[in-house]
Each structure stands twice: as structure tokens, then as C-alpha cells.
Image (tube, rainbow, N blue to C red; front, side, top):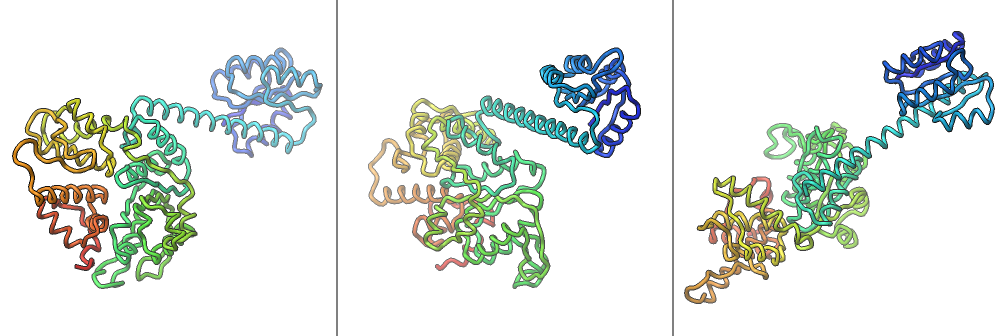
Length: 471
């Protein structure tokens, strides 16, 4: 940062220059006003320190010329002939401060320090204003934030919350029903933060058994348990300097809760089977569809861990509460699905749009995406009508139009298939969780998935621990 000294007394000018040099500031010097203005025209000067009584151009005229040429440049006026009237006049003309001779080096350093602090605050406020203005324009123009899509007031409020929390490193917890986009919100926070160029690591806590989850989070040493044939780095290590997203945090066991609390408090841990203490710099974002406070009151979730996570809570709205976003999302999904399948874009008829708006969407955005993908895959025409959509107001697939009436067995199978599809959508494809929601064993769910042709290749991590389910 450059400071210009305008003083016709060379001894005083050199003394002030030495003080400023010790403050790591770049100093320019001028013995008169004309030379000072020449410096001002060619250099980016933050502060001008000028004497009042000088031959030719006095300090007040220098002040006026500085403010005319560079309004953002601050001016400190120095004089041995100080008076209240002169001080008032200088402030009216835009001076940042006024100091009378004689003054000590410490007094001069203090005055300059105050002006530097003021400049820093104004620059920060200006930068935040520009960032917020840009963000507001982007939100208003695009109706989306990262991969989140929506123009409803609820989504605009969510975008504003994301923009605010992204500026800090505080822990965030995202609440919302399954399928509302909690992972997308977590990713948007990460990409809007100072950690955006560093890792974003996701852990689905509800899909992993306790022993597996501990190894995934903290890593393990070779030989620490059967099958540990090499050292493995955990997700916290992988997320160092970045963000870790702990999805379905409400499903972790008490033992894992204790170890997670230590990481949040101390930022340190040991690998499973290891003795070396590792330290990490990680921003934690957690998510759950469950009532954590209710789990705390039931003694199923540690209160101290709850408060460590619950620093900044954000609620994601369900799709049924932002109906104006349904068609926006539907058209977005249709464009992507049709492109991936190599099909021309299939338009929605007015009846199909009405059906989408009227449906309650218990599986939220994820269910909407699944419904449209299925409709496109099975479509036999060049448009999608209401009868092509596998839904009704009750969330059950309607019977085929025309033909003979369904038998009771056919009706029950149709309803069972729809219930399984809905549970799988709400569980994000995790079969163990879907089975829990349906109240059946995982082995029974596998049988029914195969029976109805719903078995799809899944991420192996989704079903970790399912083999241990009782059959």
C-alpha cells in the first residue's frame, strides 16, 4: 500500500517516512503540492499526508485537488497552526484526520493505523456488497443455485441461507425429507466457500454398519481386522482442507457418535487399529431426515454432539410446499433424460402438467426424476400424457386404460410394486433402508425387486452391511 508524504521540511518528512517504512508501507515523498499531484496521477496512492503551511499550494488546496483526482484516497492534514476552524474546514473538504505539530512518532503511527483500518473495513464492505449483488442477479436470472433448481420463495430463501453460511467454516446441519436435495445443498455450500478448490467428500452414514462406518470415516491400519490387507485413509483424511458431508447423521450408533464428537471438538482422531493421532482441517456439513432433537430426548443421540452439529441449521422445503417449481424441475429432468437416452424431447400435455402439479410427491424431487425417467423409457408416443405418468393423487400407479377389470391379486401386486418403488425412491436406492421403511426383511425385498423387474445395479456402498441382515 502506498502513502504519499507532502512536507517542505526535509527532516520531518524523512522522520515520518521511517515510521511508515517500519509499518511495511511503500512511501512516496514530495516537497511541494505540485510534485505531490504529479505522484498522485501516476501512482495508486491510498493515503496522502500533507502539511498545511507550504509555499505555493497549501495543504487545504492539496486536499481539494486529491479529492477531485482520486476521491477514494484518504488525506491526513498536518499543521503547526491548528485551530478548530481549520480542523472543521479540513473535515468538510473530506480529510480523514487532522494532527497538530509537534507530534510523536507513536502518535503519527496511531493516526495512520486508524486510517488503514478504515480503508480495510470499507474495502471489505465493498467486496461483500459486490458479491451479494452478483449473487442476487444470478439467482434472479437463473432460478437455480449450483445444481439446486427452483424459483419459489422457499428456494430463494434457501439460496440466501447458503450464500450466508458459505462465508464461514461453522458446522451446518441440513434438515429435510428424503429426496429434497440435501446433498445438492451441501455441495452448493462447499462450492460457494473458500474451500471450493479442495475436496468435497460424502459419507452416507445410514448405509453402513458401525464397524464399516468407523473405518470409512477414520481409516484403518493394515492388519487391524480381518480383511484389512493394507492401510486405508478415511474420509476425514481425504477431506483435509475441504468439506465432509455426513448424510443421514441421525442413523449413526452411540459408539460412532463419541468418536465423531472428538473430531468435531479437537479436529483429531486415530485410524482403526492405529496409535498415531492425525489432525485435520475440515468443514463439516451434516444432513438428516429425522428429528435429531427428538432423538436426543429419547436418549438415542448425544446432546453434546447435537449442539456441535446444530450451529447453523437449514431446513429444505419438500416439493409439495413449492408447487410452482414442479414444472420447472420436470422440464429440466426431461431435457436431461431424453438427451441421455438419445430421444427427441418429449413434451408434456396440459393434462400431464396438471397431474404433476396435483400429485403430493412423498418422494420429493428424487421421486419426480424417477417418475419422468420411467415415463420416457416406456413412452410409445412423441409426447407424455397423464396416463403415461406412473402416479395418482394417492401415489399409486393407475391400472391400464380399457380391457378387463383387474383381479384382486393383480390389484394387490400393482399396489405392492408401487409401494416398493416409492420406498426405494425415498431411501435413495439403499435396499436396507427401503426394507426398513416397508417393514420387511432385506432378503424379502430382494425377492420382490427381482419379481417386479425393479432390480438395478447399485453403488456397492449403498448396501454395505445388508448381508448381515437377519433372513
